[in-house]
Length: 104
Image (tube, rainbow, N blue to C red; front, side, top):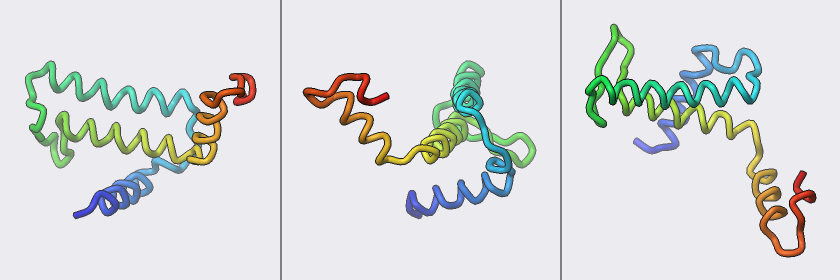
């Protein structure tokens, strides 16, 4: 099973669950990704192991699940930007002779 397959399945699941029905603000996206990390920390504080998966009904839970959710939500947020924009901004802000105002 490849990572590409898993990403595709995760995306299909998010679409089916309504993740993309309404646009989300940048603040909403940041809050949602932070919430996944907070849930992982809560599981850790509750004594769950780093590789332990448990179920609440049919919903899988645990640190690995929350970190996977974080990874997905982060990649979904990144998909809003193009790599070209990111690389150009990075180049403009780190190349000699370019000022930080050029990247704005």
